[in-house]
Length: 250
Ligand code: NDP
Image 1 (cartoon, rainbow, N blue to C red):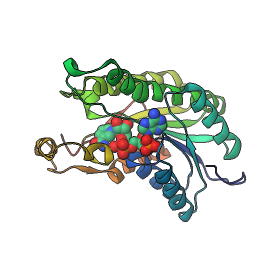
Image 2: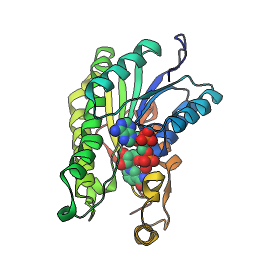
Image 3: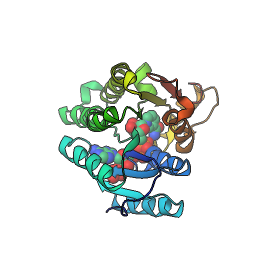
């Protein structure tokens, strides 16, 4: 899949894992804010095609690319193609992520590595690819999607929580490295959000989590997207290295 030709003066946002869930909501929200959107996905062509259509209906150019974020060269290529076809990337959002929940004692090496490779290495690959052109232009905004699991830990999620804590540390450290080049790096830490990822959880587990939130409910992808759009925008021009929970008061 590919986008249309050059020529728009809209700012460009690049979103990993943009085809479904939180990434999709971010794509739609940033399109509303006037961005053209380049997003990647791993396998679900239909979801990607649906989003391309919805973005076009909102007047945004859309570039959908099948890229596994664990593949550094493929991510680099996606970033290059985006800048070539759409122009400079102003905003990068890393939303691609997976779970393989299990107690540590039951965890296979592949459960561990699949999650860390996708969630943490994937963020590294995107940041590594977008930061250099952003530094050259002395401007840009990166928002990573972490999780409350990365802040507090969560039984059954040692792999996932470790990857998300890594994302938080990466984001805070990168913010310190590139702030003087006009680049801001922030993270959101969502709680339980209604997406395909959380749909596989037992109702009992969901109830236990919602009971522990001040608002007494799960969140919507659009509610996370709203915070991502704020952090990505100039409205957050003095915010960097922040980790913003979007968790209903967990
Ligand atoms: P979904 O499962 O709904 O969507 C995941 C998205 O990531 C899809 O677009 C998927 O593409 C893409 N993706 C997965 N693996 C890869 C990969 N290797 N390379 C490229 N794209 C990939 O998840 P959510 O929207 O719920 O989650 C988004 C982010 O938010 C994740 O990082 C997750 O950890 C985080 N989060 C989610 C919470 C929740 O409760 N839902 C809570 C806290 C954090 P495809 O469909 O093609 O596989």
